[in-house]
Length: 304
Image (tube, rainbow, N blue to C red; front, side, top):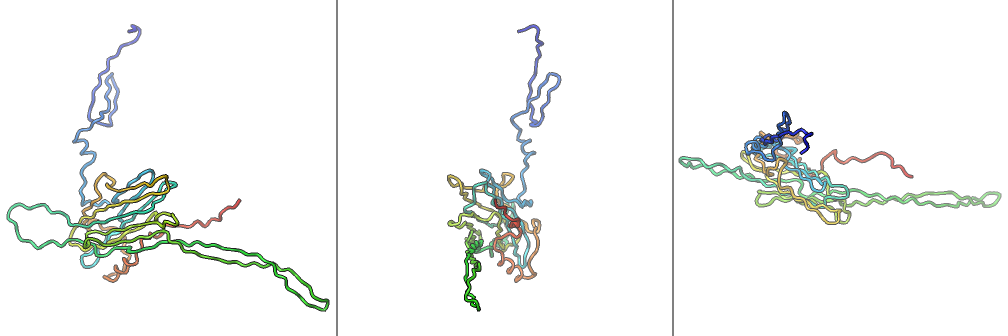
């Protein structure tokens, strides 16, 4: 060892604080790569399923993104409630969402067993889905083809000096419109109202993908709180091979299940007229389209 160099002794100690990095007076405190169970519990406390969390899930794979968010939870007449989900499908550049299958399950909140004498209680009415929207929705766009035909007409004029011929240019415009189906949404109620399933599929001939934003709605007949659970699968095309996306967990690594108390979770605007016929007419008119999402560019396309 070179006697010219100063020799220093360092003491290394580990502590549970993950974000502490201190170096002073020859003592180096390194960050620990482990965290105690107590510290982990404080950082990620267990979430109560009854607490409102409107973002049900968001999942990203290869820069393609899918999310499901509650936009409307409103009580209706006769112990019914309307729930609307906003689905966002954002494909990566060069990719598109070919199809998606979404299953929405409704069930009772489990009750803990009570101690002591068992009392006879009336059976709890199981929540069930009684109405869904859309049931069958077809989205499309219009392609317009215009043909402009030029021609020359030669009218013959007869006068005292004889006949004369003049050429007059003429034009004729022919427009053809073709309406093509961009996608379809088909929904059904299954298992006696325990679940509702929608399939969203692009037009295979056009290969334009499914909408980037659409809505799904259910009307639940219930008494008190109920459990809402989701199962979302999607297929991405446009690459060398298809990519499959499945939402299994929520944003905080929790399940997609929610215990919904409508009075606590209530959100969204009331857009229907009062009474049973009001909300029935509103739900029947839901096509899945979200207004104000698609905007057309009005700027003139520059030609070289």
